[in-house]
Image (cartoon, rainbow, N blue to C red; front, side):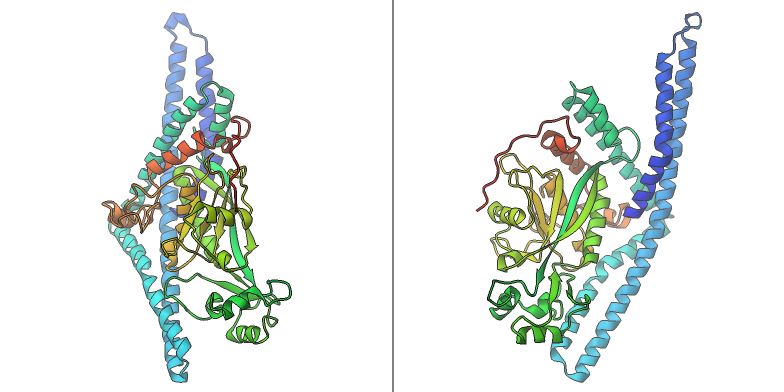
Length: 483
């Protein structure tokens, strides 16, 4: 479901239906307080109960019909517009790539010719998700919109079941504290209103500065380029390296924030790093926006409303541009604490931190898309790393995948590309729900109901003080020793 459609439904639920449901609840409470008229066997209470019951039924039916219609219409319009716009952009990119190939063949610019071929291949790969979008729209038209209705019904049932699970768990956890219990239920809109826990999060984009370096020595970027540890032309996106394993890079000159070109890098190298002053980010702001939008939308499926802030952090050196041994806690936590500023004692666990990095390396030599440190009293440093690459339609789910790990979710039991917690290393790409999910249900990967339950197990059992302040004491975990 598109985030904008979800937010429209939530706004209607908060401004229209929540007050109505609260009014019905007040009426129900008045029925309980009425004195029984014994001469008619408490008929006054019975009539009141029947009246409020009918009000609840009518309210519930009207609410569900309104949500269904608004969501289905909004989603159909959104999906059609996105498919049309994506098709136009894809066609324009492919035409541009072909023109570049022809021009470079005429001018004998072999490097740019090779890059143009790589861009064309990458743009052709991007057509895969686009074709799936059009197929799903075709199925929806052929079945008169039934997939959108089925998708709404499934989400409504899953949310109802998740709310009940959370309610039971909260009732047990706060059995001796009714005040906190009611405060939490009100905060997350458990009984009525737009359901979900607002959880603070910070997105950090790392960047490098062309002038940063040791005192009296050449800038670090220049030294790394000359030492063969990186290629400045590829780092800035001027030359294409790997066809797919490359980020949507953002680089610009400090003066005027103008785009970097080959002449700028030539001059920078020739001047010993004293030429044009520029910055390069791990990925551009539009890529960050896409990932955050998906995280906001998909987080609702497990009862989380992630509230994102954005910032940037400069990095320097080989181990900062390519985080080594990211699967080992010592290396990952060193980056999280010393670069991103995460607390060694876990005191900042109630604010998720997501660091967008240039690259990372596993001890087996591969380059994962992301990695997360999940809070545990025995290992309290928390936070996640993620990177960008193509195709963008696949990579936009990496951030919310790592957010799932932040809240204790694992890869186990997530076979199928239709699962957000799917891992290409640990899981099979196939599941029996795969085709139905992409052509009928939602057209996108999603969290399962069990994922939502496990997230709330973690919230209530491990970090309940992040749900609401003052009801649970914060533990005193041993700080992680960072070397």
